[in-house]
Amino acid sequence: MKNKVFISHASSDFRDNNGHIIAGNAISKIIKTLEANHIERWIDEKGLISAKGWCEQLKDAIDECNIVLFVASERANKSINTANELSYAYEQKKHIIPFKLDTSPYHKAIALNLSSLHFLRYYEDPKKALADLVSTIKGINTPTVLGFNDIYMPHIPKEKEVQGKYLSQLVYGIFTANSISKSCGLIKEIMKLTSSNSSVLNNYLDKLLKIEKTLNYDVKRNQIINLITDLSDFNEENTERFEKILYYLLLMFLYYTINDQRSVTAIQSKVNLVFFERSLFERHSDTINNVFDKVKRVGFLVGGVAAMIGGQNGVGRACIHQVTNEEKLNLMSTSSEISDLEDLFESFKIAVQSVRIK
Image (cartoon, rainbow, N blue to C red; front, side, top):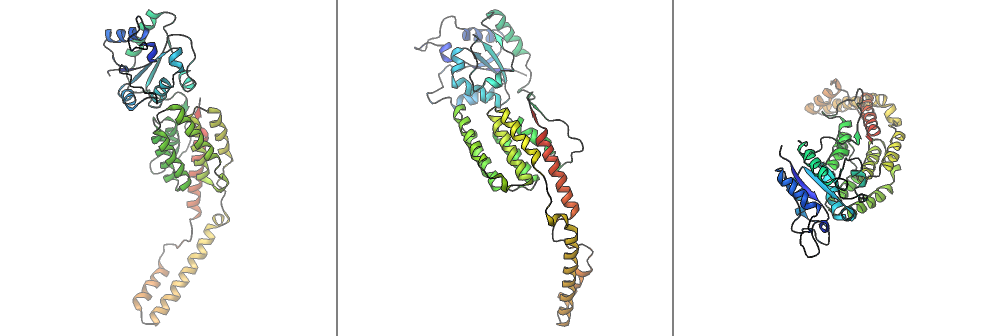
């Protein structure tokens, strides 16, 4: 495939205060090298970034590229604008290539995401770094990063499908989706498959979808932290079974989005303390259903006889038919249906416990 490179940089590394290109700057050399090797690139040459942060044009430009070249320097690593670009690129699974002009540390907002990536050392050997850049770009042949190395879901033995879906794969997808909206959609899909129609959880998911529209990384992070605080105040004692695990799953995802892996693990450990716990009625469901079935049939018999005595033969025959109908009349779920629900619960619980974030 044809690669296209988005160049994320500090404008002050490229142009002076008067808007003139700085003589001998590294970014100009990068552009020249890419052009010489017929590699398409995009760089903000019109100063699209405003005082309020980045704009939609930059977001669209990243969407059009499969590679983001981060020209890391002291200025770039202090810039929230480059942090916003890289955070968005990471969410969209773009190939990110750090190209270091000096040894300054990455911005705190994206340090965790970039720390595991191989970087090119322009500050040590400019010529070699530029040559390595070309070979690195030419070695990329996919539109996005194919997998997240920091997320792992082991195979769950004997896991059953639910309407053609595996809950473990849906849980895995929540943490590997390239947008918050897709992750929220997967959570809602799990809610539907487990018949967990929680208005409270739906309300929090709607709030998260609104937060996704925020482009400034720091603002978005603070909004997610506020949502975590709000969700943590939610009285989880009033939830049980699937809803409680979904509550923990949403908290895990929120902590994951702000790179707080320790909290993800802490919340995940609480899932082990959630149990199905059958109610008194569920433990005696078959007995209750048998009694209900007999009472209803007696009722139909009495009603049918009374109707026929009263000359309402049609109604009487309909009631008598209900008495002789072989289909059992149940008041509640059968023990078999409850067992199936319990198996589904255990599968979901294991899936949430099994996802690993390295």
